[in-house]
Length: 115
Ligand code: HEM
Image (cartoon, rainbow, N blue to C red):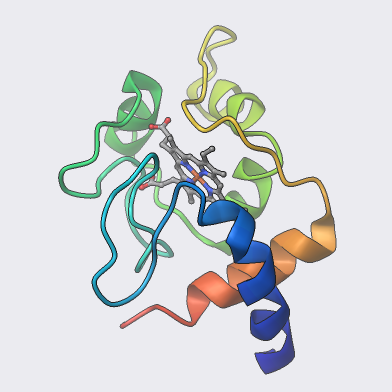
């Protein structure tokens, strides 16, 4: 697992164009990802989410490893599915196809959980 998180640290460089994580992280083009596992979708303070991500959170969507795994492979497809709305559009325009990279980056995200 430690090894996965280490590989995931390198994968996160792609996410870091938009996301910060850890001590002193700030919102940028994307929301802070510290503590994302177990956090309701669209809920980080001060970030301007799309109305679709806000709707997902209001519908009770809480991020876990599996949902993040699916979301980052195709954010628009994922939001359309969970909202049952074929016109939903993700504000995150980035797709990570590799399953291994997705698994590893999630292991890396998990190292920033405080609970
Ligand atoms: C949202 C993960 C790459 C821009 C999110 C969320 C997660 C996530 C879990 C939901 C956050 C929440 O509900 O609070 C990742 C990971 C990445 C990645 C793991 C790398 C593998 C990127 C990149 C960009 C980006 C490269 C910019 C080009 C955004 C934006 C949102 C978002 C704008 C808000 C979406 C919305 O409001 O609909 N990301 N992301 N992300 N991400 Fe990423």
